[in-house]
Image (cartoon, rainbow, N blue to C red; front, side, top):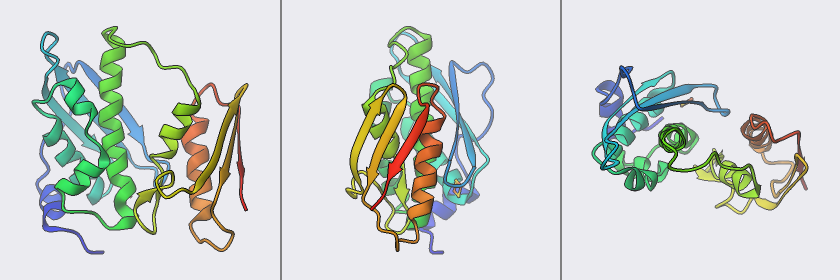
Length: 207
Ligand code: FES
């Protein structure tokens, strides 16, 4: 697998690694695609809302360590609002790209940073605990990468319909039976959504 020099540099000499003592917020997320995990720690200036310090622990692969390293670099010194705009695509760009089958590793790192920020805002009363809605489902689907091309399934227009009523999620997917990644995508969707207490059942319709 071909990695950029930046990925190799951040993997071999990662920045901002380590458990933080007395963080203001933390988040641990796992990737349904591979089972790996990342924890992000934040220290935030309560007045200015600037991220004064950020660190991570990774139980993931080289791409995940490199992405967590660069994404914590990107977040450090930014306000919470600025850091909320950081995406996995920013991390990928800053690393000069990742192989398509490793893009989900950068999604895990970016998602964990965003969850830590969200946890901080909820804990400080800056926002309410979000309701589970159809938008929550679509946001989760945007985190699922189609490994062959390294892009999310919503952007690739593989999702034709999303419904949510009384805990029942219905998703129509436009992925053909001969597609070797179809089972992976279906399984990942279920793992992303079934972790929510509001979800009783996930029905995925296929062509
Ligand atoms: Fe699991 Fe990269 S393969 S995070």
